[in-house]
Structure formats: C-alpha cells, structure tokens
Image (cartoon, rainbow, N blue to C red):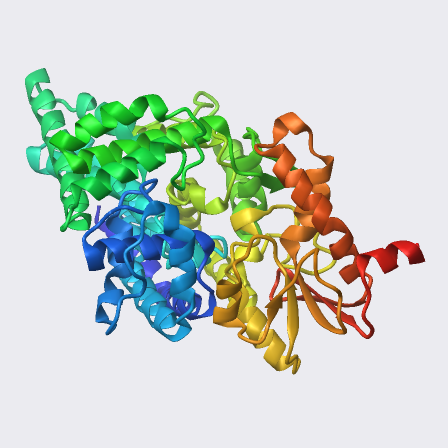
Length: 590
C-alpha cells in the first residue's frame, strides 16, 4: 500500500506542471467559448423560455425540456432594468426570439452572464465528476487524466457553456454512475439518497435522464442487503428524484396561471406548440388536462416526456451525413460521429492500448473480468448508446456528451499507467483545441477545414453549423474591410443576423444578385443537393423541403458563379460579384 502511495505521489510530482498547464488551458478555452460563440438556435429558445419562468413565473415555452437549466441560464436577465421579452404564448416563440435579438447589447450581457453561470453550475461539476469517476476505477492519476481528456477535447470544449441542457445532463449522468458504484461498495441509506438527488437532477434537466433508470435499479438490487432494505432504498431514491423534479417545476411556475397552463397543453397536443407531433397527441389532451387539475407541474413534465418520444417516433428533423439527408435514424450515425469528432490522439491511444492489452493478457484469461463497481457504468453506456442508435434524433455529438467521459475512461486508465503517454497526449489535445479556437464545433478530427480534409463537411447540424459562428463572421468582415455583406442562410430570421452584423442583409431566391460580397452558409451547399436527391419516404415534409431546395438552387448557383474567396468563419463560403446578375441570366449563359 505504501509503495502504491509513493508511486501515485511520484506520478503527480512528475506531472504537476503539465497538469497545471492543462487546467489553465482548459479554463482559457472555456472563457473563449463563452465570448466567441454566438447564441445557438436552441440556446436562444432556452433563454427566452427561462426568462418567461424567472421574470413572469410562467413555464409555457419549450416544454420539451425540463426547466432547471433554463432557470439558471436566464437568471441574469433579472439584472436588467427591463424584461428581455414580454410574456409570450408557445405559439409566439419565434417572435419572442426575434424581440430578444433586437436589443443586442442587453442580449450579449445576458448570454455572457448566463454562460458563466452554466459553466459554474454544470460544466465544473461535470469535470469534478470525471475526476471522481477516474479516481474510482483507477486512482487519482486516472481521475486527473480523464478530467483533462474531457476538458481539452475539441468536440467537448464548445458544448460546456452553451445555454442548453447537454452539459447539465452529462454532469448528472456521470455523477449518478459514480454514486451508483459507490452504493454497490457501501449500500447505505445516505448513499441511496445521493443517488436520488443526482438522478433527480438528470430528469430535471433533460428527459434522456430516464435512461439512468436501469443502472440505478440494478445498483440498488445488487447491494448485499436484505430485500426489504433494498426496496426501502429504492423508494427513497424515487421519492427524492420526484421531489426534486416537482421543486424545479414549482420554481418555474411561481406565478402559475391555470388558464394559460391548460391552453399550453392544448396547443402542444394539437401540434400548435414547438413539438412536431402531427395528430398523435390529440388523444392525450383530456388525460393531461385531468392531471393538470391535480398537479400542474406533473402535467408539464409528462407532456414534455411524451412529446419528445412522439416526435422521435415520427422522425421530423432532416439529418445530413456524408452527402445524404434523411429524417429517419441511421444506426451508424452516432458511431460515425464519434469517429469523426473524437480527437485523433484519443483514438490512436485507444487502439494502441487495446493492442497492448491483447498482447499482455494472461493465456488462461482471454476475457475481461468486469468488477461489480463497473456494472452501473456499463449498463448506462449500453442503454444510452442503444437509445441513440435506434433514435431518429440524429443531430449532434453533444447528444453523446453524457457518455463521452465513460467512453474516454479506458484510455485514461491506460495512460495513467503509462507515464510516457500522459504528457504528449494532453499536450496534443491542448494544442489542437488552441489551434481550432473558437471554431471547435465546426471541426473534425483529421484537420479542421483544410482542403485536404475529406471529413470537413461530412456532418451537418450541430456538428458543423448551429448558428455559433456569427461573431466570427462579423470579425472576418471587419478584417477584410467588407462594409456590406449579403448572407445566404435559409430560415434564419433577419433580427438574428442583425444582432451580430447590423450592416449585413439576408438574401434569397427572390432577390437580384447585386455587386458586392456574398456569404453562403455551408448548410445550403450540403442540403440543397442532398434534399433534391433524397427519396420521398426518407424525409419528413418532403414536399416542403424539396420546394424550398428547388427555389434556392438557381440562386445559390448564380452566387457561386462569382469570384470564389474561400471559406470564412468555418462555415461561410465567401464570393465576390463585380456586376449584377440573376439566376436567369446565368441559365442563358449556360
């Protein structure tokens, strides 16, 4: 035991400098992410919904996510002299987002403060949970390595301070797994209570927190205690979790109005809310209204949970990957996302460590022996990946954030035992994230957006363009002395663009192509040809999407016929036109 302690102490002393440097870089990256990324699409809706709750006491928007993160993210809006937006019904969500962007100075302050709060309340606890997870399975050295692998990974960096739920649910997932393993080792009522609180946080920030149920139940049943004790602990866990959810919804409904709450339920059930559920939730309107009479908070939680599942079954979001687009889930999507978005250094380390383990294994024991403490972790990873791979929500690597630290854990275990590997691995991750700053979200792991990178536009949505690059586009226009910019970005609201580039103008198929500068968003280059090549049965709202793509194609091609100035701000293709032209004139030239 003393020898092990001396080894760990020596390990820390020998790498204290690189650990401190890695921590400093991770902190600097997060501060850069807070300031350098524009407000993402979902982030704006989360912020407005949270503002409705903290300012007016009404949880009427964005019921597809529980309110805990939104309450914290929007709390800084109370520091402003006037409301960010007036009270709004769910049918008015788009107008509310536009109004928030029409006062960019106020919005910038609220977003900055909100992101710092999210960073403190959820990102730092996530990294602390990573340290606890690594320490639990491989000692303090492994905890340090796992924390730095997570904090310095370019695919994780841009997510941690976003005004969305992914970081919070990731912190709750990792914490719950750590506490479940602790309970397996020491099954006390106190440890069961901690599981209940962590699990309660998970289902108070995102409905995917329910995927922790199997790990929690199995952990409680594995305990070496009489069955009546285990059942009592299970009841305590459930009571604490439900109580925390109730408290969260109560905080978001501190001035609850039954008439408005019931109308919101009707709107969602009749597909007039922000969930695309067609007519599938109409039969639930009556039961949910009955629940509202007894417990409005429970009714809102049930509405969100059922709505998310219903929307997933329908498959409503067009997901782009490797040249094709579909609204139906692909089983290979998230494995491919992991391969493309995980830093190469971590992938190489994983392969090398797997080869070394295979060579060093005992001839009589070719299989891995799974310790009891690892069962909650393995169940959680299996459940989460199974749900992701069978889901129609093929959206972004951020959806894998709850299990990313668990997937990094084997690498952390191997690196912690190999002193020569720690410094180069951490250094490479830090340098990579510094080079990519602040365009991490648009990056892939072969090499950012260089022409030789075959994966640079292989993925879409939140893996490439999520509305996060407008601040960088504004900086690029100033650097190039572009005083007037035309932007091609379908379905973007003019108020959102004006908040970051006041002198820019959104243009589309009905506009003439005037002399000047044009920025074409990469989603046009991806989705227009992919939608037009898609099969009708593969796309939700196929007719509407193909009509939109058909309208945009000649205009985009006419813009692309100008002088190509390359990509700026990662996801905008810049063109310059000397003379006016129209899509029709381009066709005649052909």
